Structures are given as C-alpha cells and as structure tokens.
Length: 296
Length: 300
Image (cartoon, rainbow over all chains, first blue to last red; front, side):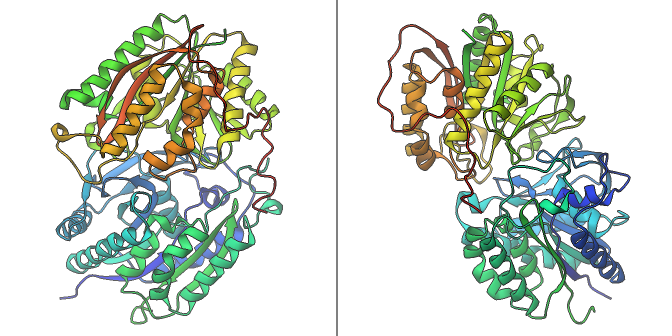
C-alpha cells in the first residue's frame, strides 16, 4: 500500500498585485500588465507542481494571524469575496474553494499532541485570508484541488524568532506525519515574501513598472543571501540564520511559513529551483520549489 | 468647539458577543452602555473611529463606503460567532478629510469597496456606541509604519476637517491598554490581566485619564509601548492621535466607565469631555508638528 508523502514544497509569496496583474475572472479590478517576471515564474512553478499530480495543497499564510495558537480551516467549502485590507484597489477576489478537513484535523490532532496550542475554525461565515487565496491561485489557478489552510501563530511578536521556529518545527512534524498517514500527495506552500519593507505610497498606475524596485539595497543583499543558500541546498543554515534575517530584512519570515516548509521537508539538502525573484511595492519576493530528487 | 467628545474603548469581540461569560467582560459591556448614553447626550453629529485593529501600509485609509454591510467573523475568536453589520458612513466627510490630510503632507486615501473587511475593533465599537447608526460615522486606519509625527499630523488633519465642515464630532480610539493576550485558551471565569506589571501600568494610565490628562498620556506613549505593548507595530499610537484630534491639552472631564481583563489584555472604556477645568499643560519632551515631511530618504 502506498503511503502519503510531501511531493513538493514551494516558497509562494502572496502579493495581491500578481493576481491583479494576471486579470483572472475572479478578480474585480483589471490591469494592463505588471510584475511579469514573478507571474511568469509562478506559471513555471504551477506547471512543475501539476506534473507531480498532487492531491492537496497545504498552505501557511501570514495573513491569517492568530495570537493564541495555530488554527486550521475546518469547514469543507467556502465561497465568498476576499478584499485585501491593504490593497483593496487591487484585490477583490471571488473565491470558491474546498478544504480537506480530514487532513486538517489530522494535522491539528498531531500538533496538539505535540504540545502546540491549536484550534479548528468551524465558523462557516469566516472569510479566508487573501494570502492563502493568492498563493493557491497562482500555484493552481484552476482551483481543482482541496486545500488545508494553516494560520500563522504570532510567536515572533510575543516571544522571538527562536520560539516561533521551535513551534513551527513541531507543526512541521505534525504536518509530515499526517500527510504520510493520509495517503495524500501533498504540496506545501509557504506563503510569504522575503524582505518585507513596503513603500508607503503607490503609483497612480499601480502596475507602472518604472516605479518598482526593492525598498533598499540592504534588503536586496539579505534576500540574495537567502536565495543563494536555498539554491545550494543549505536549508538548515537558512533556518539557523532566520532570526538574523527576519530582523535585518524586516522579513515576512516572522510568520514561520518558510521555517515550517523547510522543516516539514526535513531540511532539503538538494538545490531549490528559483523561478523568479522580484520586488512588489518594495518587498522582495522569490518563487521557488523544493522537489525531492525521488519525485523529480 | 469642533471635537466635543472623546472615547477610548477596547475592540475585542468578547465584549459584544459573550459578555455574560465573565463578570469583567460584562463590566466592559456596561461601560460601553454608559459611554453610549454620554455620547447620545453630547450633541455630536459625526462619529470618527480610529482603530488600532485596522492596519494600513499605503498611508492612512479612510472608510468612505456609504453603507458597508457584511457578516464579520474575527480571525482569532471565530468560535464566539458571527457579527452582521451595516453602518452609515459619512462619505462626503471622508473625502474632505483625505484632501486635508494630503495638504498636510500625508499619504491618504478613501476606501469604498463592497466587501471591504472592516476590522473587529471598529465593528465592536460602532455596534456598541452607535447601534442604530444614529450618528454618521467615519473609520480610520492605523498605519503600521507611522510614528509620532505622522500620527499627530493625522490627528490634526482630522480636527481641521471637522472644523472646516462645521461639525460637532465625537472621536473614538479603539485600543486595548496592555495588549498581551494569554497564548493559550482559558476558561473565561479565570480571566485576569496578564501580569501585575501590565495591571499597574493600566491603572496609572486610567488615573491620568480620569484626571483629564490626555496629552500627558500621549506624551507617555513610547514608554507605554515599551512597558505593556506586544511589539506588533512601531509604537503605541492611539493616544497621540486622540490627543491631537482633541486639541493637545489636559483639560478634560475624564470618566473611566470600566476596566477589566479580556483574555489577559487591559480593556477599558473611558469618556473624555473638554472642560474649562483641568490639569493644565506640562513641559513636554516631544516636539509639536503641523505638517508631515516624510521619511526624508532615511531608507533610500
């Protein structure tokens, strides 16, 4: 009998600008163009992920922020409209998605047994966060797979990055064990940017690429350091470096998404595939996959 | 007098959805009731809500949808239930405020999109203070990158907009005092302020506010941030904004309607009414500022 496994992981950032620029029918605003390198990179990621024939996407999003433990969507179906609270001019997206509730419950149960504080989200009126939606849309635009959506427990704010990472490593073990037990072929999505200092102004035409660049060189250097390490398969060093990186690059890695991804994949020592790196309103974003050699 | 009434209130959903589960939560709910009664007697014809639970990045966002309507669920306390709402927003004032804020060097924009996620704090405050939408409202975001100068200028812009419109405004700062939640689930009956230190600081702030010392409280914001705030944003801003919009002084009649823990945080409801009597001005450490000059390429 075949067992479940994690067939791939992806660093899948969630700038709503990418969906806006992509003009899918679900999104109300429309654009002329924008952020092509990142969007085309995402297209190649989606193609590689599709070739692995996954059964489920498991996504950890910084935009479902929970200060009491880690939460999991626990309702089988959601259909509503997601409006980005920060960029509502760009992202008003009508979503219709299915949740793999049994797998979510299995991860939650294992995480709770490991000592983490957890909660299943059972309210059908709940609005799914835009980070989850953007990362899933760009990785699997056809929305034909169920997802497991995991919140970001904000242990970095309450304690520090080290505590956050310890919690994410425990969550990662729970995720991996639950996937194996489920028989599913799972893809993990770490929905986060690298450096995360935004511009505080926006162009009159948001997709005007003549105004797009990383906020500062310092952040760029940190982003490149991390990308290069991941491309060399040095994921354990990345986790070791995470406290420094998170502080220096004002990184969205404070969410724990990347730590969770790398730990759940048992710290890949093979090179990650970089599909694209680019800035979005000043933040640094890399689209990368981690596909175990035996799956490639 | 343009700003005739000020309110400070916690925005956690327990106060609206489950006050019966803890005597302290009930106390805060009853405090909101008393604040509502005072608000209704104030002659205010405009209600302006500044919510620390609505973070923004692109400057300052101003809710301008005339009738936002949705069923809201809190992302953390979703098991407490859903909150249907419909608010009456003074769209015209929102646009006037944006223009005045921009003239003072601020990045600002109005928001009017169906389905925009109004934050839990704003929903709780408006449902409890203005349940029948008797007073048209405006909701303002709290910019995550803004520090004192920008926040003070934003408060002054709001005051200038109120004066130009010839309105009598009540202003609401939605914020906890200490904001450290317990990081595990608790029996509501066991709720308490997270630490004695948090409680002592909360009591000190309430002592100031009861004495009408709003600007003094605002001047303590950086210290408050260091002592009793979880570092989610750059600084503790609501008192800067509230004091700026109310005129930057210490001459108020302050009433603390309630103070109790909500999942470890310090939840209070306070009313401040401008008065001739008061504590008078002090010698302040912080500069005053009228126009925001930006980050001056510090990050460039």
